[in-house]
Image (cartoon, one colour):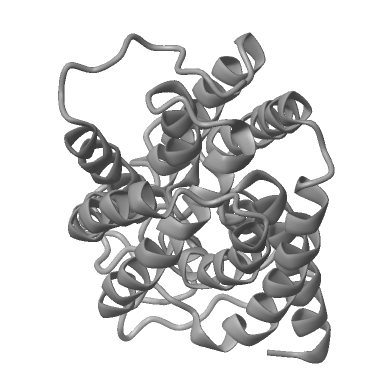
Length: 297
C-alpha cells in the first residue's frame, strides 16, 4: 500500500475502533462502507477484511471493559461457543449473494436495530417476556445468530449481540457492550480464517487498519464508561440509522440499467463481435482483391 493509503487506513481504523469501543460492535459498521467505498473493494472482500480488523478493536476495548467489571464472562463463553460453529455458515451464505443484496440486507438490519434502541433504550431489565428455556439454551441461540451475522455481514456480530443481551437477558447497555466485545474476540478470528480460505481478506491493508482500530477502541471504551446508559443506547441507534441510510443508497447506485444482470452476474456491456454477418465487411477492413478508393478532395 502507498503511504497515503496507509494513513487513510489508519484513520479509518481509528474511527472504526472508536465506534466499536464506544458501542460494543467491533467497528465493522464503519469499516465495511469505507473499504468498499474509499478502497473500492468488492463487498465480499470488504466484509472479510473488516472481520480481520474488528478482532483488534475487540481486544483493545475488552481490556478497558473488563477492568470496569463490564463483562458477563459466563454468558460471553456460551454465546461465543455457539457462534464459532455458525460463522462458517454465514460466510458461505455471503458468498452466494451479490454485493447489492448484501448491502441492502446490511442496511435493513441496521435500521431494525436502530428503531429498537430509539423505541426503548436498555435500562437493565429485559423488555421481552422471560424465556421458558434454560438460560444456557437462550445464550446458545443468541450465539448462533451472532455467528451467522458475523460471517454474513463481516461486522463482528455485535449488532445482534448487544440488542439480544439487552432485550432477552436484561443486561444494562454498558454490560451488554462489554459482553458483546468478548464474543467478537472469539468470532472474528474464526470468520477471518473462513474468509481467507475464499481469498476474501486483503492482508496488506490489515496492519494500518488494525493499529488505528486498537487505539480507537481503547480510547472509546474509556469514554463509554463516562456516558450514561440511555445516552449510549440512543447514540448507538442514531449511528446505525445513518449507516443504514448510506448503505442502502450505495446498493441502489450499484443497480444495473434495464437489461443488465446485476452485481455478481455477467456484465451487461455488449461484447465485441467475434465474426461479421455473412456478406458484410467489418469496419476498417476490405474484401480481398479490392483496391482502396481515392480520397475525396
